[in-house]
Image (cartoon, rainbow, N blue to C red; front, side, top):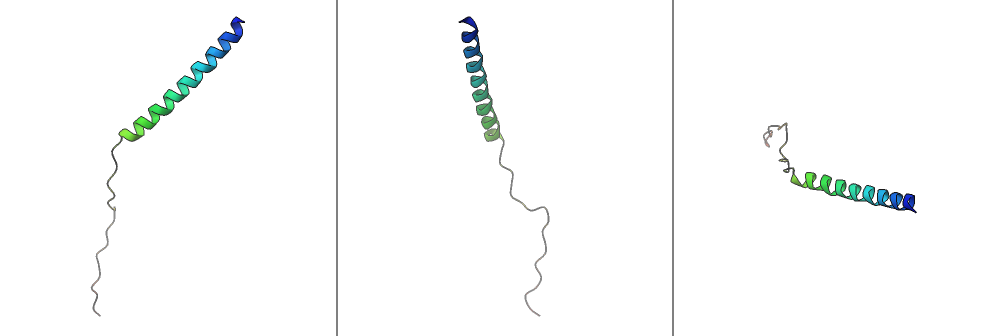
Length: 50
């Protein structure tokens, strides 16, 4: 019976660690600031008349 209890506790601990890691990854992704949406290259607008 003690092996079964140890196996159940190991599985529960592994599941708890996986959930904690998932929440930690989401928290890290939410903590990073949004990057500005500015283009690296801009082109000059040509004149409209010809």
